[in-house]
Amino acid sequence: MSEVHLCEVGPRDGLQNEKTIVPAADKIRFVELLAHAGLREIEVTSFVSPKWVPQLADAEEVLRGALERAARTPAGEPIVLSALVPNEKGLERALACGVRKVSVFTAASEGFTRKNINATIAESIARFEPVVRGAHAAGATVRGYVSCIVQCPYDGAVDPEAVRATCERLAAIGVDELDLGETLGVATPDEVARVIERCAAVRPASELVLHLHDTRGMAIASAMRALELGVRKFDASTGGIGGCPYAPGAAGNVATERLVAACRERGYRTSVDSTALGEAASFIRRALGAA
Ligand code: HMG
Ligand code: MG
Image (cartoon, rainbow, N blue to C red):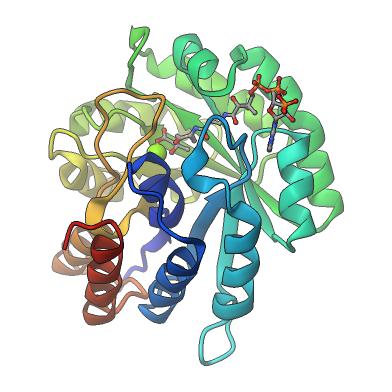
C-alpha cells in the first residue's frame, strides 16, 4: 500500500487567522494531541512580526513547549516540529528555541507578496538567501512555500508558469522542499493539476508538497487528482481551521481528518489514528470556543 505523508499545519495556519487568541499552554497541548494521533510532521508556529500576526506572538514559548513534549513518538521516532520564518530575525528566534526545520514563504503573484511580507518576489528571494544558508549551517532543513498557485486575492488569475518560475528561484537558493499553496481555496482539480505538471519540471511530483485551502469545498477532489499525478505529501489542518490574514475571504486548510479518510478510501496509508485525531479536533474547537 502506498504511503501518504501529512504535515499538520493547524497550530500555525489554523490559529494565525482565528479571532480568539488561544493560550500558549493550549497550543502546546494541541501539538501534543496531534503527535499522539500519529502525525509525524507538525508546523507549530511562526516567528513573524507580532504586529502582523498577534495570534502567534508567543512563538518562543509554544515551540519550546512543543519540542519538550512532542518531539518523539512513544517508540522514540522523531517528529518534525517546524516553524515559519520570514527573515533572518525570524530564523535567529527559531534557532534559539532549537528548531530543526523552518519554512520561508513567498508567492507566485506580486500583489499577495507585497501585502503578506511587504516585499516584491525578487526582494523576498534575496531576503531568504541568508536564511537558507543560516538554517543549513545550523543543521536545519528549509521548506519554501509558493502561495497563490492559481488565484491571487489582489492580482487575480495566476499563470502556472509564474508558479514554476518562483519554484525555480527557491530551488536555486537551496530550499530542501517546495510547497505549493492554493491560498484562496478556490481552484478546481484541473487547475491544480496544471500547476503540479509544470512544477514537476523543478522537483518530481513525489517530492512536492501540496497545501490546499478549502473555501469552495474542492480541496479533497484536488488532493485526489494530485495523488494520481504522483504527489505524496500534503499539508492539512485538523478541524479545517484557519486561513491567511492577508488573503481576505480564504477559508481554512483542507481538514486533516477528511484527507486521512479520503486517502484510506483510495488505498493509501497514512500514519494517523482517526480516533485520536478526533480528540485533537474536539480539543482545538473547544479552545476556540466553537465546540
Ligand atoms: P516589515 O514591517 O516590512 O518589517 O514586515 P521590517 O523589517 O521593516 O521591521 C518592522 C518591525 O518588525 C521591526 O520592529 C522589526 O524588528 C520587526 P520595530 O522596530 O518596528 O519595533 N520584525 C520582527 N519581529 C519579530 N520577528 C520577526 C521580525 N521581522 C521584523 N521575524 C515582515 C516584514 C516579513 C516582518 C512582516 O511582513 C511579517 O511578519 N509578515 C508575516 C505575515 C504572515 O505571517 N502571514 C501569514 C503566513 S503566510 C500564509 O499563511 C500562506 C501559507 O499558509 C501558504 C498558503 O496558504 O498559500 C504559508
Ligand atoms: Mg495556508
